[in-house]
Image 1 (cartoon, rainbow, N blue to C red):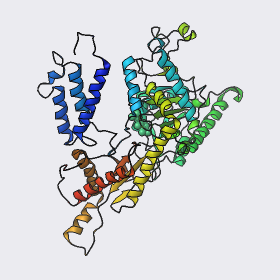
Image 2: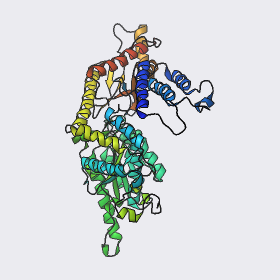
Image 3: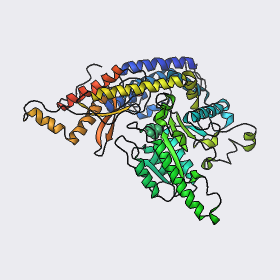
Image 4: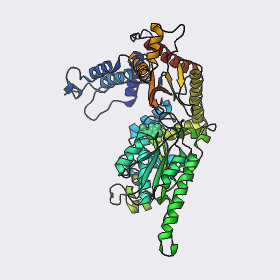
Length: 525
Ligand SMILES: *Cc1c(COP(=O)(O)O)cnc(C)c1O
């Protein structure tokens, strides 16, 4: 089947090879992730690459041919994957992609449009423009004014938000405010953009992981310069939504305070003091929570998001897209000076633009850029808002079910009430029963110390990973930063019984470890 260089076998044949190898790899895995731990996976994958014999074999002198290479490596990838389509894979904001979106993604790879110039992406340019306008409308922005871009994810979208805020402020003294539960990418973006001097201010959170607006107000009042406030709509670890309307009001107060001061310094106190966005910018990181905008039942959780100056959404989380499907939106079409590339004549020119040959080059940090809006467009048309909303609701219901199961189980402790689709909890061994003083109660007392509870919960998660039986997440909670487990439920096909089975695995593993047994091998799934 291998022809001369440059001739590819028929894509249909190779797609059949991929689908067969995916099924075979999944069968060999037999569960949500490969059993045996990292050493075993590394060995299997190096075998498939030829690297176990000789590292140089990853680039062999003579190739195996497309079908052989594709079958072998796809099988290894599938066998060695953590599969978000398995209901026992529930650690991260890592969703099972919709088949329709995966199929659409194949079309993008086959055609390979690049969005940095019209002549590389005639149709894809319009698809991205329309998808951005539709999502802007969903957020509550005026779609005729709003602008945005498809990004690689929340990380790039947060960088874009801080970049536009810095450009609007036109001075380097802008300070970043975010909650203690904000995503790590906010501080990284601040560091990349040089917005970490003065340092990013971490506003403490309440007992439900939400930004304390009273403390934000106080911090803003003590800051005499422009501010960018990053609110989180769906914290990565707890799914908490910061109080957006109150935060928007605090940003507005800051703007008015600074606008007033600026005006007072102008001659006669007159004249324009600059756009309010120059003094205060609200970026809402809705990378996780943005998906609830599809749900008529839950979209009220994001009330206030339309007051943002910029928004990050991630449709590779609550949107069931293949990675990457990040979205950056702003109601301000004008504030992108850092991305203007006037001399990129080979990609865009004013006369071409005037003639309607739009280039999206100035909308992105990237140059060559995949048409990741295409699977999104196909999904929106295929499922509609109702279809996506129903999937959001289903995941939320699963989380509510898990919450009830955990509350009813004395060996489990719930950390926060459920907001979105995340449930944070930990295992706690049962209190000693019977007349005290025996070896049993001695061990229980030991295992209930904070350090022992941390070790036990971390051990439960790792034992499940090594067995390949379940992928549950891990985080720290509260002032003592106690290790907890979490279920991030993003699989709308999972059932309440699946969730109970997953919790049952945690319980059984916790019972076994707290009884001091050596971890058992995987006898059965
Ligand atoms: C996932 C997440 C991010 C990062 O998004 P990526 O798509 O991983 O780049 C940012 N913020 C929040 C709240 C997230 O949950």
